[in-house]
Image (cartoon, rainbow, N blue to C red; front, side, top):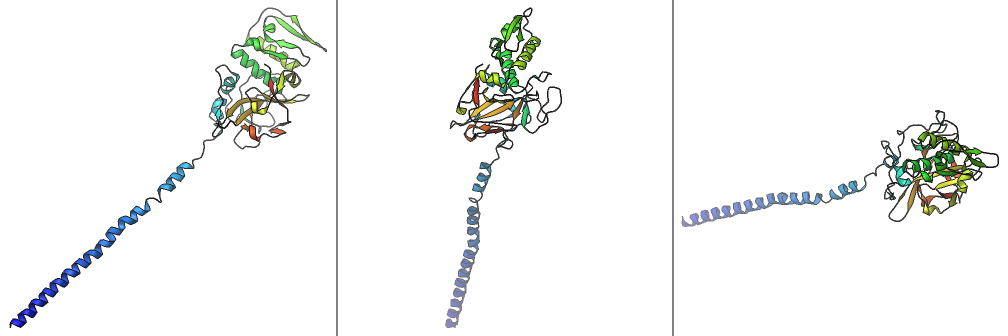
Length: 313
């Protein structure tokens, strides 16, 4: 009887121990997926951040042409990494940057109100006054810019342009009452009446200048310079009959010293002064100094080496 009780007690103990081992084993098996899950979640985090950073680093730069801009500075932005050169308050650069433009998409008009035949050469049109005669052509447009600049900044004594025959037409003498008589060989002053400093009389003076000045007289009033010295007001000039001239109307530079510039022109027949495209760049009218080669191609004319000049106004 005692032996049977011992066997029974041994079996009970064995069953208790077996049950305890089974419980411990099951508990360990259940812990494995719970501890593995957080590792899988954490390992996925680093793969997301670089992709997000890469997207932010590849943003598209803003367009250079802003069709809502009302003047040159607002309409045409500098190229990436470039900035406009500094300009004094009454400088020609500031004058042109702030000069009003026609609304984007407007055509270039001729002196008689008709549209110019080629409307694919320009980016913008300046609201520069245009006389109703076929007088204000390419060289005349350059002189009109300078004349309007001197007039509006109180520098009227600097308004003076040379005729092809060498005659110097000074506005201050014209406004004092003298008039110009243009002869076959030379032009000269004659008494013309009372002093008149009105804008209407100023326009009469300019029409006289436009009639007897040209690219040939611009050549007499300019000197050749290096393109690396480019400033607002400089010109590419081919003096002749016919010749042509285009004008630098803005300049920008990069931290490494590189420069770019904008060109504008009038043309024949007399037409509105307009900002030119650069045939090398779609939607970017800037001409980069380090990529200029000769002949320099503008939308409607090409200029040979040695044609870059600075006017002596």
